[in-house]
Length: 68
Image (cartoon, rainbow, N blue to C red; front, side, top):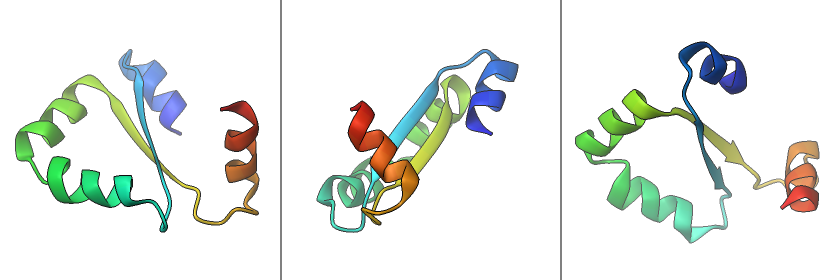
């Protein structure tokens, strides 16, 4: 869905890969994404997509590990 929306709007996708064991995602939530200006800029310029890879056995998590 994010890809379709990005194509429709002509915007890039901003991907945040997160996991329950990853402190970087919690930091972004606590320090960055709480800022209304940051959220507004993201909404204007990108199509945000958050991917949870907490489950190491999930197909998407495995695909991302293989690709990146």
